[in-house]
Image (cartoon, rainbow over all chains, first blue to last red; front, side, top):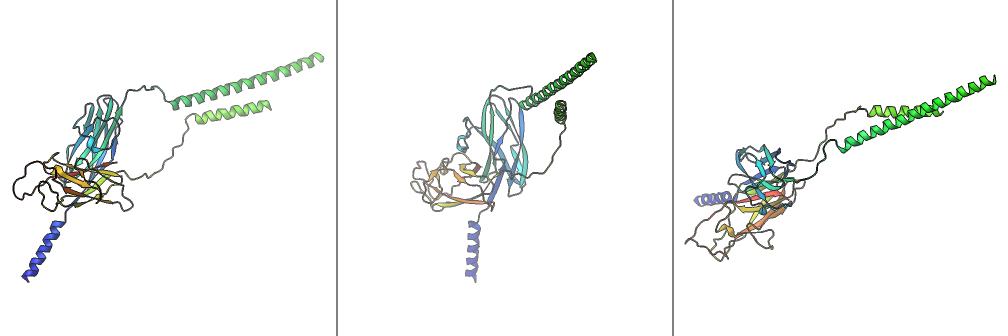
Length: 191
Length: 155
């Protein structure tokens, strides 16, 4: 009996040791494109997911000096980047799903390529969302858009055609009246 | 006849300009788009590397199961939480059993987006290889541990 009990406890211990918990962690969207102008603060909604309640998570950012869109986490090794300002809550308690505001300001011309990482405390899962903003010097057209200019142009064309048609009608009427009056004049003269 | 044609043309253009003069009809409908893209993974919290290892030796290979529970393709990269560890800097990973081992920091694992089941299962292998370790080791059997995090980002 005691041997059986010992065997059962050993088996239970093995089962307990071999099983391990698995943490699920998620973030959306996978890429956050801010399209921010110079010194403009743009905020986007980011959602964090977990399969556990009361999960302490911390957020941090990493940047790269690479200008191209390279999705390789190992090159994002800068803790900050000049001209790229990201504002977000650093520590959160996650109950399955949470939406947060992540705000970005471009303080100078250039590319801001980074990643926002959500770390589940000292647990093993982390997820990241790529940060993208490209601010370049370019000429801008102000005033009215191409669509506006097209619509105004079309209206002017219409009015022009109407004017021409009206003029032709008036001329036709007048010429007919002239012919009539000429005929009347000739008739009267004949009479 | 000519006059009638001209009158009709004028009427037609005039009515067009009236229609263009700002009369619009609003159409409204509910349109369902695709699900929001999510990067999500499921990873084990604890991995034990069997077989004690000394300088110049390596542990047995251990299988690590990892699941893509989001809906986009991801790249998973293991990293030491502390940034560096004298022993666990010699952690190596391989994608398939016959593949080359890559040291932590150089290894990443690509996972396709899940199919209709909603989960894409994946696995790779890890071992601790102290063949090139030149540091000191305390005498006797010492249980060492380090926190490794798996960072998942969209491909």
